[in-house]
Image (cartoon, rainbow over all chains, first blue to last red; front, side, top):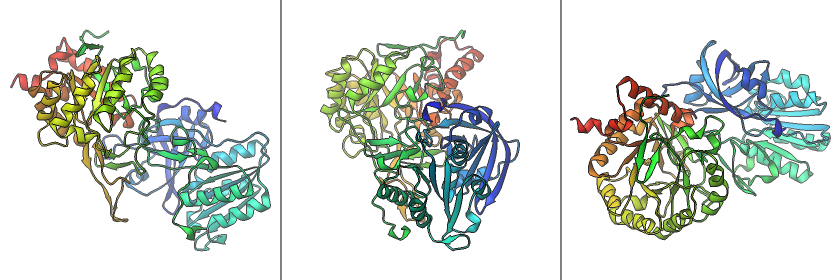
Length: 270
Length: 307
């Protein structure tokens, strides 16, 4: 898949719509013909939300879906940038640098895949699930969130996945508990050829460990604070068994086995 | 074609225009080649290069601040040999002068890097970095006292015939003292400012956001500090000054030139818009045309020369 990834460019984009789709999560749709035509599943865009604002850096967002000339981005309102983004209206003009990074890879001969999404980790899974379905890959998907109101893209996932299950921390939907309980079960029951995971890093670390134990290759999409997005500033480094890599250009998707995971001090997440 | 003479000199080096990239914000240039032709720049200033590879600091390495950012990258780089083999080889095929930022923990390490780069015809100048606030040994420690700054410059000057630029720290009481000290040791130019030491504390965790605690402040927030220091230094030394600190557009760059900078460098703004430096080149040309400025060098220090 990587060899199809196009070179990045700056593209002016127009906001088509911007609305809340879950508790504290919004979906913004951008008219972005060039990027929409070239983005691959798992790649991201670096969005300049506002000029002349007192926050100067772009914000990296994975692309949830690319349809026609439009990009869909899911974002959580967490800080200054996303609070301003939430106020964007239809017709507002911004710009993106994209498509950026290396996305998900579908290994030759994949017939069964397991997708594990925690929280906003569901965002980069939209395009992935669509691509897997196009290729005739049978997909099982497990999504975890704090509560039912935080689950994302359920209709899309339910329609394209052979099996789509959820877990919530408070039990308001699906299994009560962490998504890693579901991933352990599905890894055993579905016998996937490949696992894709995105979410909080402790969750990804646990899924990576489950996959290593089962001998199934696992890809993870890692998030880091990022300034340039193009490999120059070295803000977003990821510790790998092959040295420090940049999440923006070497990732954001990495083979889980290559990542040096923090030992982690969240055993309660298991 | 512009009627303005945009050429500037740094020591024995002539540049086609005065717009550079600030070290550490532009990789080796390669990372930005998708966005414009590097040959349109006055020169590319590379990330810091040390004798052996440095792994830099743990993350988080950056945090955004009002109109700026803090970084504590810590000069992560693959070392001078790998730099020459990969980045420099690639840059050699671009029609643009290359200025290599040189870092070290000790004066002899700076000299060893300079000695290695002396063999490289693709290196047009060295920028001796005695002002990085993100390393424990060396870096800014050399740039905050005159004897230490002088020692590093002397050791590099002894082994290098290339144009020698010394990058100064703003984290001093009187920047002109260090500027004079490095000029006396044979620096061909000085560049300023490097980042200002700063800190952000997370009120949820009660801890500094950056893993290292402190970091260097850059971006538009530092611009007035930088302009003031360029104003001071350009009147204190006779070598050219390269001005930088929060430049985002030609108007910002003009301000630095009026303050006394012969060249300007675009840093953090590369992250905001990868084409910023090219916009500064064309904007400076346009500004000069509109104001009847025939040579861009006529702007240099005009704010104090005419006072």
